[in-house]
Image (cartoon, rainbow, N blue to C red; front, side):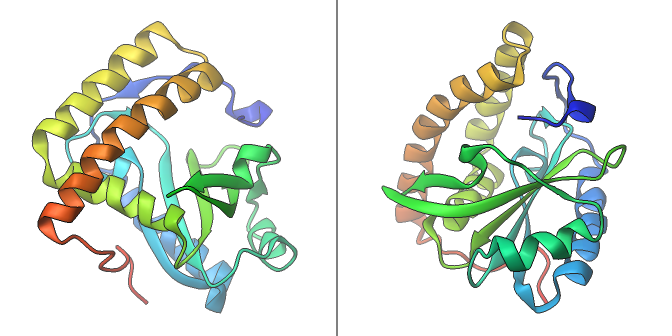
Length: 195
């Protein structure tokens, strides 16, 4: 759930050319703050897919060796990032496995983003990269996903309800992504932002 300063209806907008630069700026700040904690910093989510309509909220995945709130939260708090408190921002199921994670919101008034800390070798970090790479590679899937999100946002402007509905549709999308990965030999190549 958003913090009070982030409360607004869901709006899915056409792709914006500035999203990669917004990610690059965030990635640099996160690398500086986390130092050796960050194995890789990836642009993930819909804003990482050229041509895809998305909420104007940049998703960043920081791959870490282990999710350790006591060690990592103070590093991000020092640059104003706030750890999201909800249970679903602490644990997610991916590939049938329960995976720990941490999700951080930006400082109040800063560029809208979500920073996801996930284990580098976890199925949930693979999931985020596969989502991105599949939609980058398959124009029909990308366009269909964008149109679905635009229709959903127009009819369900509440972020919580929007997210719950989208989660079920994402499972269907990712079944196609897994078939694509198997047919192309896709693997997790590496970060958008290599060290």
